[in-house]
Length: 223
Length: 291
Figure 1 (spheres, helix red, strand yellow):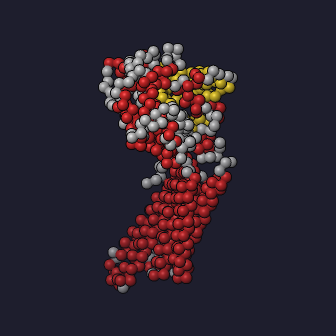
Figure 2 (cartoon, one colour):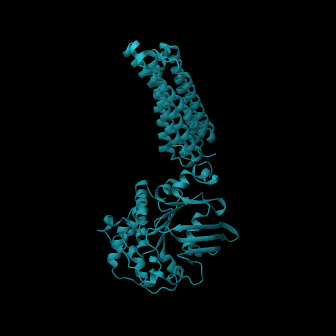
Figure 3 (cartoon, each protein chain N blue to C red):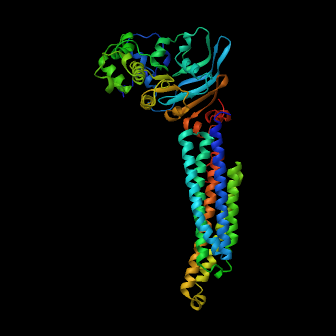
């Protein structure tokens, strides 16, 4: 096959994007674990690990730019590079959100609302990320649609969780009986946790949408 | 641009039949078909219908059917020997000059088959001009190179003005206006090619065919030719053969991809061809996996 080096560069880009997604998924897993176990050391590891994700992003961004500038890709190659360029941005943002989880874990008492199952929400986002990257790795368009559909379920879970928090907040009896400042801080952090996980879901949908575009030139899931 | 707007007349509705037959010098009938449609529309000016070309028994082009839109740049790409230049040369019957060449099918220019017996190839080539790969100015002055076409047609009205318009249209006027008596051969390669383009447009063609017009030029001269092609499409229909696919992507509105065996594999909007071609062989060719 002609342009062997170029083809090898494209394959390397795909492998590197998949590796970055594995690192980001691991950070997200660790962030959730740190929250659940109130593991400050793990939380710090997640926070400090964000630099590695950012460096990967910059390196892959450069790889994409080089491929465009030096190889003038067209057709499916161009869509692959354009999609990868977008996907690494979403992965980097998911990395940032995992870092947020680490920060929340170091700051607060998270089980103040036992009815809110953050781990369940977190597991769903991890599953969505895994499936979006499976679609990217294996050119599987159907999975892209499934990820988008799962995001609706995630949104419902997040909405229900937020409702529990708000209802608790307006429970005046509880508010009066506890230190209102502490309660407000916990509520705020938990709301941010829910919001951040919901955003992780949005980023995985972006990845699925760009992957569908990459595979089929289909922009149906993009916004 | 070089052309003055022309007022529509009764003859605008004439068929191209009359316009390609037996010219008389300076005859308005030559331009009869020009304004049959509004400039800027995308309706076809050239229509190929099952066009095949044979050199002796070898088929160089296999039943090509396509519509080339008016006032647009249409690029033809494909590997060597795919038939793209053969097709280009069919459009103004340059293949007539090759004894062994035989053309089948219909090639319509404004509705008239250019291979009909009553079509005069000389008139046809005035309306469908050609620019070749290597610049080929005549060993004459810059002025005489451009004035050559109008002079041999016996139409020397406003000749100075026409030469100036053609040179401006070819984006060469500012560089040569003070040296019109110098030999065309003294110009740089890029300037010589633009001189050839000026020579082509001096006779007011409808279509300009270009066969690898920038392949012998450096990047700066190439970019000037590419800019010029975009400007030319405001007035003319441009059909260009190029081996440089990035050039096709940069300058054309439509792209035809010819593959082996003289087959037209795909013809579509250039953005479609280079972003999401339908044909897997075309995809493989333009991404470099084949060819």
